[in-house]
Image: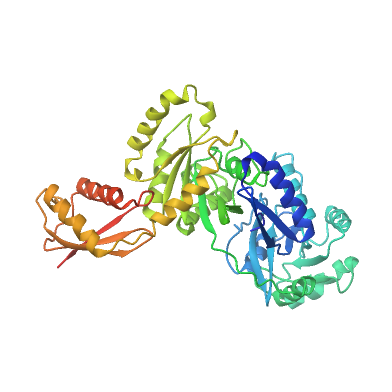
Length: 477
């Protein structure tokens, strides 16, 4: 929840400058609809930094109390900045996990990862400098500490992997170069001495508690195959390159949250790893990212399936669409790279028809053509997400449902799997998200799949509940 940015594309750069300057003054002034100014208190930002594989993501998850960052034994798992709201006693702050400070010739993205970590350090109110107690202090880590000191920010030095008191007695002396009382020995894996670290964090956060009540944030998961432009699209919307973008497949591993504000409604954009078949992937870290991406589909309020206009829809696009359908979440389909398509007006209907033919099981999902390079229609994604999420919460009174049912019984009576007619006596709505309806009948048979699809489409058309799957349940009465 580190970024709260106005989405006014005519003044996008100006808005980004306002957000940056406000982050230094303690308040964020965000222009909405060009005439309303909204002020929000800026929570303190504490950033975890260090070299790869010292346990930054493990500590991040421990302090947050949830497994938000992917933890892996192989180094270099975290690449982008990952952030979350954290509370210690009565004080709230934004905790940021970063990639490791390192340069590697074998990893072309290491320079970008290091640059993002350094950028996060500059924006921080305080730093947690993390070391591996078992390895001791490496010369590059000492140089990094000197560089961080020049930022003139409070630094909490943490020696991780001190799993036992005996190990602490043997290893802690090596860290006295930072001062006897300056290093906190912990074990993030085993939660050892985390209370000491939390007390240190509590003492550097301003005493005034932040009790501001935040509006509900609509969580949008951006999902899709590798290299369809998910990170580029989010970077465009927030107006800065927060996420690392590369032509290298599998660049994004963690699912990264970014909060933006549009028309006073906050949206959380979740950039996920590109989803592909696990048996085709050798890198275990990318596999872990894909597993987390699939979990984020279930946790999101709205799912945004991004596809490539130059090659769509593929089998993998269809597989991801199935995951979205099974989740029951509102869904929108987005064709990116629309700027690369010649004669757009002539082929628009053709592309639309092709999409819904290949993905007919999610024909309820609205389709948008965008360009992450030019920004064309990108902001419409947020407005449409709010609309279909509202549709998914629609409750229809029982009398209206049964009027609808009487019309269907007379015009096109229900059919069973055996293509026999079924008498449905009445129907009620059971729940929302997704809208779920119970149909009461004497028959043991289930509905013919084609008729179930027809009935669902008719429900959407009559009660304007587009963008969400509809569940029908037959109950014998």
